[in-house]
Image (cartoon, rainbow, N blue to C red; front, top):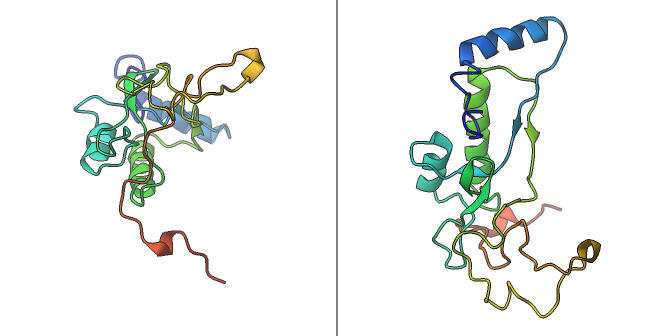
Length: 172
């Protein structure tokens, strides 16, 4: 990755043409190549994944339902795809397809998909909101840590896209 940014190649250490030739050699030898990515999308203007996701409102939002939630993982400040939004799967598939067009691979290792963030509560979350600071704590290995440790705060919003009953009903 270029600076840990999803769907990118380090142009100095791993130029696309060289990686493509290397993966071709691997494939011819019967060896599979599986790159790793994290669902945390670097919220950097100019990043195709970030710009297109932001344009389509495909990221998990703060409690206000409008402001993209910002956490932090390997590339720095990140936003997270809202897979409850009806358009996110197509957007994610397009990111993967464009990445695959650059360098063929056998699969993707999706890491940290439970949503991980190195910033407890995110950049702008309200730790005082009752849902983020309930009168109990999870006794995870004796830590009694708040609910938002290394993940999203509880008041973020998912599914801010327009849903129809048909998305949730099952045919009998």
